[in-house]
Image (cartoon, rainbow, N blue to C red; front, side, top):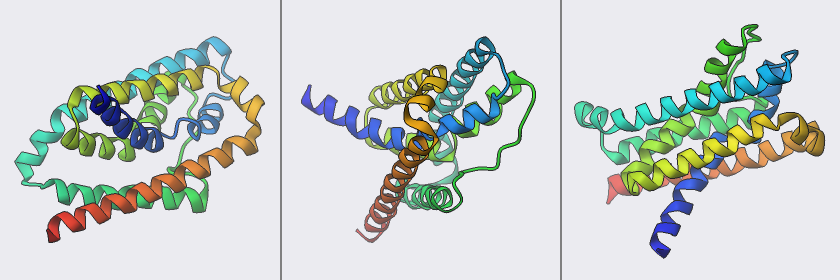
Length: 198
């Protein structure tokens, strides 16, 4: 039981940092600005289900891609760590991970860029593949689903949360999350190098 809880925590935390649920709030609000509350909540639902589908699909095909291309876990550790580090540094410097366009159709916005690559983008996909190679797949998928549930709840309550924390509070929390993600990225690169040298 203790081992299961340990693996759950070790798989939940990297996904939580990679997903950056709090940091996604300002982008969600910007992309759904001017949309009625019921349509905004619908957008939150569609974005969450899109992210779930992309994540599960990537987990299902990830190992097959590894075998097909002859990629070792250490290779992916280093590549994934470099990607996560670039994303984290970009956000810390520019204040955004990706360029977003103001799309008018709420359903389109829900799928791209909200569902992917905002909620489930390179950072989350990289983390999922690495975690599945280290921990039981059921635990990783539970952690992923739990993180998506948190993101969904935050999207549904976006207005209230931003009013409570303020824009500055949300941005500050997002910066801290990205700093921790950068540290995780460096750890992944170090583990990849040590695996190759070992």
